[in-house]
Image (cartoon, rainbow over all chains, first blue to last red; front, side, top):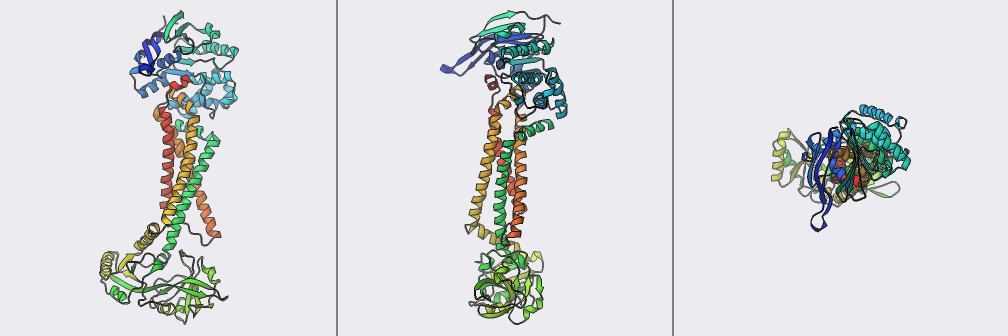
Length: 234
Length: 378
């Protein structure tokens, strides 16, 4: 069996106190494994984005533990958490959040720049990864000149440029038409996934269900179902 | 480390409209600030023109004197008493008073008349025309060829006019390093003639100019003069005394200060608001950077670098613009008084740093408070 990349135990998260308290996550435990594409699905307000934020070291849980690479991440201070995210995770946001005043290549190079890599070296790596996502001829254009699908691929290149172990996708097909969305997720599945990489995707798009190894369904802050099987170690 | 500054630079300058707005705002603000304080310095320098042009080491005067022009005559014995002080190398009388010149067309022009010690002519200015010894000839005056020279209808050597109904002859034209403040021409003559031409009260001695034997003797001379009931100031002290009068005892200092503060606030509001808008527009991206793994200090470095870069660029451009306009104005307007000093430069630089600090503080606060979780919430 594959090794777990992320292990979450009894995660709870609430917002507010007293009568205004809202329970967003109510005791969730899960594992995500290297070599698998794990979907977290559920209706709006089910807590999937909150759970994703907790798993990726962005939102502190009210209780429970998250272990990544054998480290309990919520024992780290803010700077250590930032360093953890920079070294271990790659993010693709729902709205991409690309800098419109930078070129595509410069946008992709950002994680390396944050790692203090020299500018030229970071751009060189960015061009390499733009080639992987098929956008090497768009390197000098600003993101605003690209289509939605191309922008998504730029965001993917940015997420993988520092070669992280775990990739986090937040609603990757939400802003795309059905066909483009399918192509993107297929690309993620066939080109980005590897035995040493774990991909967690939050989505409510049923059209891309076929590309998941496992699918966790959430409702009202709880896991209501897990479908699929953990892939074997390669 | 450098790559993050390159990133900050590109984020800033690639947003051309905002970058231009920031630069224009700061340039305008620096221009106004430097212009205001330089003009004030120019005015103050002119207010002390007689002290600066005369070149005496020490000035003895009535303690109530506030500016050179407002001299309070002292009795003649003060000159002898000062000369007798141990430590005084020499001391000479100095006259400063106002008179009316009747020009060839019959109109009158106020002038400032300086009377130099007959024997030494101490405090005389270099001549650009004529001979200094001609000052001893009958009715002789030397005209200072400064910004006010035209008001005497550009007299040449030999020109005759009336000063307080006395015939006077121009025997020389002098060059003054610093022009006067009040926009009236200056004439030089010997001390005794000045007393004859200008009506006087009981006492006639405006100032005693003193050369001490050495710098060490200055405190002793000042103490001895104080015992006589008068005040002895070094040239530097006298200039400061005049400056303080204009700054604190007239509305001039307050008005210039208000204008400078307004310029500062204009710069602060333009750059602060533009910079804040710039941060707000990029807030989501800063949040994305935080989510990706940027530490708070990385983002602070980015914002500080951007604020500093715009401020220094605005400072340089504002300063260049101000210096160019002052130079141009001095060519076209001889009366224009404005002087950029190192103090002005440092003061404007500090103000620009304050603008950069406040502008970036607002942005930094916003970015630090930003929760990367908000990025996921959209």
